[in-house]
Length: 537
Image (cartoon, rainbow, N blue to C red; front, side, top):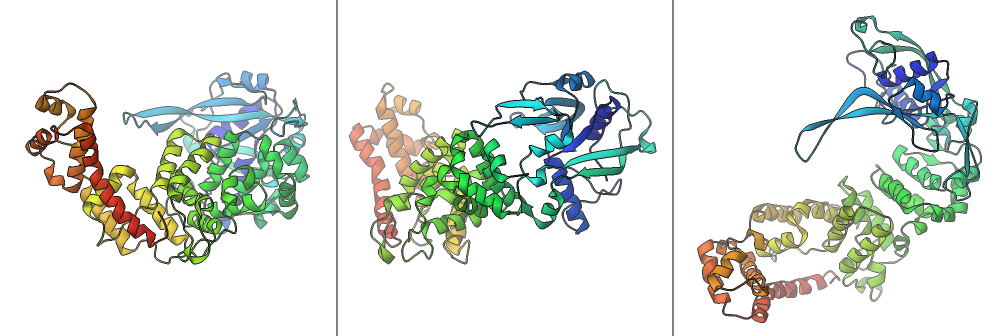
């Protein structure tokens, strides 16, 4: 078995200083899952250079019986600024990442967190321990962890240096004795005090000890149970799930930011639909996104075979995009239908549910403390998800208007949302001819002018032609010119537009505003008649 050199170096250094040291928690779980997958011929990769299983969990955590001050003496280039006693050791090995602003590469350090054995007492706020004490044994430390599959420790023993790499080798840890740059682990021992390996094999998620005790310590663990279930495709053990249902209200005491982070991981998992359903069945969803539950059992119309809630879950399930904003839009796009429903049965309507839905998205995502850019993008997708397009009925000008409203950069995501909507409605064909034709037209008109900035005349040109000072009339003339160019891009020539400026300059602001609205109103009239066929507005 191969382990990261940095982890081996840290463990060796702690042990050589007279302390116990173990890899612990999720990294050991990931190691065991990789080993299991490798033995089944699955996901783990065979190393071409060394042979054996490559072990590369995302994060490695180490626990030890050394106190924070003792850890820092061993690793001077480390920092310790938290009440949990966690010391972060920074190695000299650099990870390289790309800086988008200038395209240059920037170096970053490989960091490993080392935490002393500890115990925690009473969680009055269901979030933080009232007091923390350093423990004397590994067993005491493992007892406080959340789930059996996260309560492993690994003792990597008898590291044998690779003779081929002895020359000029240097330790990756500052101020430590030179060690081989490559190692082979002759043996390792898994410490499993709670039968976690059996749970891994059976794909079961259960708490360490009594579920209510673990969830009382940190109520977010109830949501983490759902997250692990969908990330690993595990089943939550019945008693654990019952404890979540019984104590779901504890989630109200958890910060919105922490809830948001777990929700994002659920949405971006391979089974996001399963995650939302688990949250609902566990009684947690009403404390996260209660607006979703309003669609439970609410029928739609002749064009939908599923209830609103079912449709949203299926739309999320079949979303072809891995982008967070698109997946959230798939989950939220019809969230305002219960609010806007009129009538019942096959002729029910949901007028303006796209507009109201966009407002709902702002409220929900603001409440959950999402970054503004993500809120704006998700809201925009929901706002325009009802775009109407039929090959023989919508002109290139109509496509230009859609691109202008939604943004060219968002069109692929909008089409992915439409695919989610279609598949979530039980339609077998994800991308019919008309959607493919729309993609073609978007590509065709993508270089056409869709904003005043793309016009061949500027506000400064208008001031010179009309001999007027800066004022609202300039913007009105630009809007009127754009309305004409949207209909006919060939008009976007400097000399042609200069002539039009002279004509438009004779009109007052009200007349110019009316001029720019005429095309939009004509388009809206056509859309209104067509949308009625689909019981939308």
